[in-house]
Amino acid sequence: MDKHDKISPAVIRRLPKYYRYLGELTKTGINKTSSRELSDMTGFSASQIRQDLNNFGGFGQQGFGYDVENLRNEIAKILGLDNKYKLIIIGAGNIGQAIANYTGFYEADYEVVALFDKNPKLIGMSIRNAIIKDVDDLENFLKEDKIDIAVVCTPKSVSQQVAEQLVQCGIRAIWNFAPKDLKMPDNVHVENVHLNESLFSLTYYYNQMNKESK
Amino acid sequence: MDKHDKISPAVIRRLPKYYRYLGELTKTGINKTSSRELSDMTGFSASQIRQDLNNFGGFGQQGFGYDVENLRNEIAKILGLDNKYKLIIIGAGNIGQAIANYTGFYEADYEVVALFDKNPKLIGMSIRNAIIKDVDDLENFLKEDKIDIAVVCTPKSVSQQVAEQLVQCGIRAIWNFAPKDLKMPDNVHVENVHLNESLFSLTYYYNQMNKESK
DNA sequence: TAAAGATTGTTAAAATAAAAGCAGGAGGCT
DNA sequence: AGCCTCCTGCTTTTATTTTAACAATCTTTA
Image 1 (cartoon, rainbow over the protein chains, first blue to last red):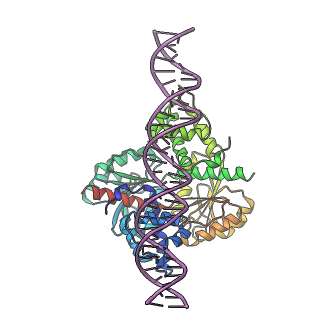
Image 2 (image 1 turned 135 degrees about the horizontal axis):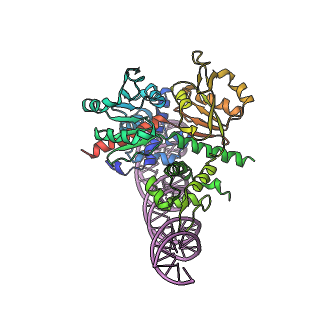
Image 3 (image 1 turned 180 degrees about the vertical axis):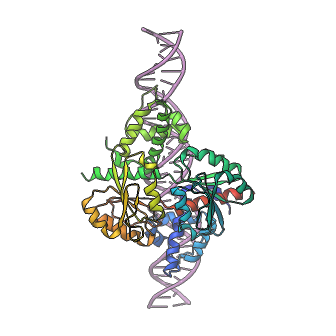
């Protein structure tokens, strides 16, 4: 059953997309689908979708397809979306506040418990039930509250130091928005959102298109 | 020379990272580097780095390595960072405003010219020299101003429609923050920043680690 | 000036990921 | 009921990506 440790990252990155499209099907009242149909929606090949899902078990039925709700629940279980997660955000600047205000992931059970900053003007403010606290209180806070995921939205100059502090306090999952690669021990998982790199890639393809059309 | 069209997306996604680390070297006054050293910094293998760079030409010197500034400039040219780009942001909510305020990409020549929203409370406000305009004026605006990149920060329910409008007005590069895949013609490039998917992946790995350590 | 050491550019091999193909079983139709 | 069609799960093949290997050649040093 647990061959999970061998699953390729590419597969894991596709699962949320399947999950999202299955949610859309549910909303429109469709309760049956197929790898073919999912292929049309997601753009991945039907073969790849079947193979991805089969890494975790046979969720479909030959000759019939997949039960939408069942498959969605299975993927939720695989990703762990059937649990609740407590988040804190370090750095209550633009990005940090935007994440705290972001309603997109409130569909799943993610709760932003608190934000931390060192700017006195921000400390004490609250965003959607989460208070901005002094970053000096971070360690004490983490001693008392069990936090699952820390979101790093600090300037890059302090991101490494902040991350190390988080890890020392027992944090093992970091969602990193600082444009810097965090050097972390193996038992900590870092998911990067490097906006720069994303924009630079886009810039490349934009220019490629312009070259081609000339 | 122009085998560019064959370059794998994986290579393109690594270039911004090289660019960033080369920038850090420049700041610390180091003017010579090697694939070995870049490997230590980036975590990519030295062999891969050499191969990536050689897709675009031989920027190094045998027995010596790479000139930091020269290599950085070459990568800038490849990505197109030696040009200026004008951006508009559609949707001046949390994410839209955060992007407008984001100073990270002002290092390169990206200028947010305007934001668009339909919320009357937001229209007229300005963020770092960029005014929030009525989204109804979008088409007229695009007739007069030459915009390179449009950033879609709207709710997902209207993102497709907005994107189509943008494309009709000549936009060919979209940076999409809406949690939805935009169906676009081939001559439009969409770069997605799907925060949900990123967080869900992180959640998976977080749970994997917890399973393993038990 | 010649030899040693270093590091690229490039080719070959290995590993990984994606696509194609197909047997088997399920549902639907007549 | 029995045949036909469909679609999964799995195996095999193909394509892509990464790693390894090495000849060429540049710099440095004695």
